[in-house]
Amino acid sequence: MYRALSALSFASVVLGQQVGEYTAEKHPALPIQVCTAPGSCQTENTAVVLDSNWRWTHISTGYTGCYGGDGWNTTVCTDGKTCAQNCAIDGADYEKTYGITTPKSGSLRLNFVTKNDNGQNVGSRVYLMASETKYRLFNLLNKEFTLDVDVSKLACGLNGAVYFSEMDEDGGMARFPGNKAGAKYGTGYCDSQCPQDIKFINGEANVEGWKDGAGKYGTCCAEMDIWEANMDATAYTPHPCKVFEQTRCEGVDCGVGSDRYSGMCDKDGCDFNSFRMGNQEFYGPGKTVDTTKPVTVVTQFVTNDGTDTGTLKTINRLYVQNGKVIANSNTNFDGIDPVNHISDDFCKQQKSLFLDNNYFGTLGGNAAMGKSLTKMVLVLSVWDDHAVSMNWLDSSFPTDADPSMPGTARGRCNPEAGLPATVERTHPDAYVVYSNIKFGAINSTFTAN
Image (cartoon, rainbow, N blue to C red; front, top):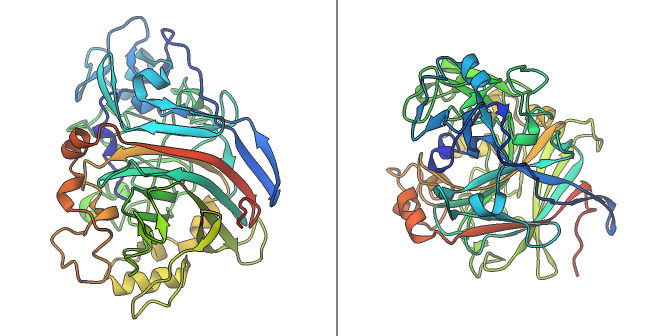
């Protein structure tokens, strides 16, 4: 929900748009399965690529950096276009520099803190690739998406996030000639927070107005949060936008501060967090969904007519653990129907009871979200939160609100526990594991005893 500026927590945040030649890029394999019925699945030989915002950026003709600390090299980056022409990004050493490994086929482990030759890297974000140069696009309508997650090492203040963003299949190369790196090097990121800490947007450096790790421009697109979670809290959340492709924003359109409900995208989204919805015993260590053990997470995108071209009606969630299907918890508040899925009615009732702005509805609700779901890129990440310490996920938020008020309490965590300095000092060995990714017809990707 509050992912904007999160990339400031990463020591290796550097980006360019040309291609360097010092380190060869080799995408770690992460095969997925596409299913038509239970037990009837075919393997796709997919892989992952590291987001370009993490990569070493240097002048195209040498080792001199284009960005360091919190500032641009003003000699080569006099303006956005010139900087993109002068600067290159290189391939990544996924394990040594970023702590990204594939312990076994179909499994991805993302370490939180990784000591490396440059100091340390904190967090990472990768995208699923269909080929060496293109992201794997998903049409989620009338389909389900399933994966196994292990968050047993993610403490308060951390977020193992799996989501879909409406990025360009080629990372923006075709639309923006200044981008010579493309999806092969993880370019073209966008999400519903319209992040302004992305250093190159639309093939140009975001140098104008750069201050405190953010520039004049942001990069916006619809986002479907499948899984934002640690051991103590989880949420899934659709975030529609006014636009239906990656779009650069500035000013009011970025939705910063008092413009939050005037921007291109619904930054709040319509979240379903079991703790926040009134069931505090459903998710966590030793709870109904026991986070000390791996769990299979199933998300279903149900259309009004049961077709891949229909209008998105509901987004359903269920879990499988220890061989048993676990239905999502029901809401437990007067004023919200006792449901366990996301629909426009649920969102309207939730926003009304919690006294939240229903910008989700203003931007078209599930129907608008469904329009974006026809062409989404899969994102897998682990991160800490320099904006609001992940309190929106696992603590009380706003922190100065009465925790007894409906919608304020989102988890059991102490608000101070999520401070990045605290999390990075006390949990450097944290990690998340994603595995057994499946996609296909509804009720085709999981089995139970």
